View (cartoon, protein in one colour):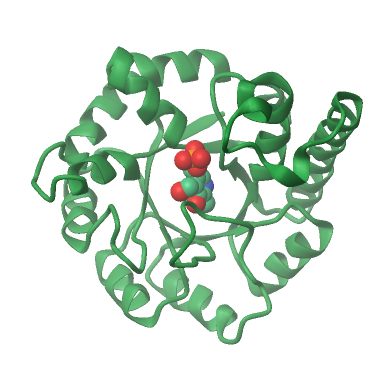
Length: 257
Ligand code: PXP
């Protein structure tokens, strides 16, 4: 199981002061030494964390493969075709969202051409999708190399059962349900991820997963055989504030392996 470390939030901290520290590029070297397999960054339309200059420097200097998440934005696509990261993950984007909510709309016009354009530059393309049979078969028809299954629903259910989220002001209103109901929804969500992973594997797609994964909820996901890569950001960067990045990555890798 490979770990793609999402380092956006190192840039979030930098942007809090609009200075040049901490530098996300420094994290790339620490991640490599700690055993991470890939660096993931998201060039958002509002440039709230990662900027073009980060993308350029990280791709030029990285000793790990780089996966860039982006929305279907014409200018960003042109820029990324020039930069040639190893992988692109196409994600939906809304300006007002705190993080990527929900999977990509696979019915949007021009998606097939965008995927082909990236592949012309030897860039592997992944669609970040809601885990459904339909999104997997459409992704296959669109010609992607892999799918990344959105684990947000699983992570929310897990947090409502096993953390203090249900008593917190940020509690998820739609999930304020009885514990036994939440438990069966969590099982369903996990089973669904298993079914979708097997289907994607059968269709010869790479199978990745991510969003909301942390030290407490990652183990059942790791056990889903077809999944070969997890992209994890917030939980590892948050822990690194207290333990240092090297240890935060190693702790996650220990759980994953
Ligand atoms: N995968 C994708 C496609 C994402 O958009 C994100 C969030 O940027 C992640 C994984 C990582 O999510 P988290 O920060 O919750 O670990």
